[in-house]
Image (tube, helix red, strand yellow):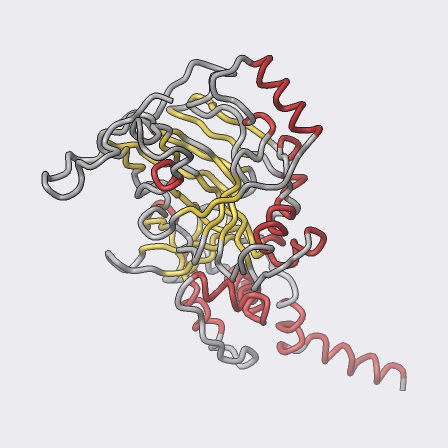
Length: 380
């Protein structure tokens, strides 16, 4: 009798339905998610990124998986924001099934490679998503506190004062459409403005509707992470204009919000407050390098503060702020700003590298409002 029960149990465990159900609980490999132009200009195809080199078309791969009798039909999302919103409601496990299918059936290389599998260098990588809204943390790294116009000693003293009194986060809204660009897209230096600066940041992608979320529970509301840049115009407003900061001038120009190159789901990245290493190079020279110990407020504290003010939805983004080493700072090197022809490389270990050329904006046509202030950079 015991032998009979054992054989029945073994038969059930080895059945395709049982194997597929079990395999869906885990992915054979870690993966990332991106948006790609594969089928011609204007196409936006969601892809699963494997080994940072291989792109698997989500919809086509899902159709292949559904040819098997043990996989129910599941409609695939039309864009990344929809994917993010559905991920925790079952879609995650279909993505695991797709990865397991292409890996176990050797569909990634050689003669058995599927038509829906591509090398990353053969297709165009777009910004992974267009956020509904994007919040950025201002001055959230100790090494960035009072970095402008100071010596290294003065900056260190300012950082120590901030450690003694962290205060509360300072968040601002960054434009999305028009400002968001992706891998290989150009950062455009605004006409007449000559003080455009770089800031590498970690972009946290929200995965669930979040309002009044505590820092202790904030991780539950995160979908994943990207590389972000908060390109900044340090040229200020014209003299004798209204006093105060102008966040539109400073942060809102077109192309000033690069994101990408793809999104790493949180289960494949781990805790950014332990793993974060963000680096920015300009023409191969390291300008910024920082880890989580430099952050004033954690990712989770930023989410707590942000959601105490506004509701964040799946696909919204919160950027963690930048470290010392910006062009405007003088604590580490002479002040300098972006120039046409330079190349930015922004890297976060475990996510990827955004590579962005820098170009100058064309001279705008007259009588279009393009010559209203501010059309030049201004001294403090």
